[in-house]
Image (tube, rainbow, N blue to C red; front, side, top):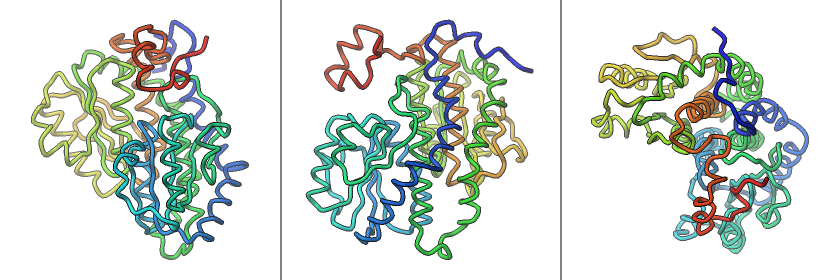
Length: 382
């Protein structure tokens, strides 16, 4: 049954909602033009510099995007890849970083404090530096050796949404271009086909899913805590979703790697909680379905994100995802329903900041946050 998705959206602007709905268009834009030119330049430099190692750096959503792409990059490129929070890498730079290392700086704004110092450090080691950003005129973009620019430009909304998806997508496309021996890349044909099909799949999914999202928000609105569990690359989505839910709803939320959750935190699960389980096609899918059933029996509300053609377990709501998406590229689309749930849940709970503005208009936040981040990164301009 169709629902009025504007029921709770009583005040403009709708920045986050609009940003989520722009994702398919922006993913398509990543397949051509400037992105392709950036990828070609990076591939040339990789060959010239004989790159044998990647270091991926970011903060918050950008760090989670790095975690999301790492499994695919390792499988197809078969070289060492590590992910770090940027300022942690600055404080504890124990990674070997040399002329054969590529250091990726993931940052939408290109304004994060301390990034330029790390760029200088990497360049001092003769590493190849790449900024994965949407702002070509930013200080970070000007400091690195090469850019991997995303479409969409500067964002007004604070949550990452479109910038998270497009950053992951651009790196997936770069990974395909970096493969030197296709015969040695496992499942390459399926992965290649899947990557280029994602924009249309995301577009179709959004239009179908949002008709039902308000039912899910009603299911979750009275929960005392939210638990999001993933495996493989979707551990990044579990962390990203927990951050988004905390920001927008005020409901305490935590993201977990599946096995780590099973071995300990599950003991604290109660009927007052809700668990969202991410179960794309993959070797660990059956294990996740078992966890979903266990959580239902314990009494928690359960939401399962899984391919539409699987047999459902005991679950309160089954989010039917497209059936032909390889696990290693699934974070691009599996994050979309999580953002929509977080957005609409934030509108009805009122426990957090308004999901379109967060706390950007609150004077106490403007005063407090100036001690830990640049004001032009988060204070809304009126």
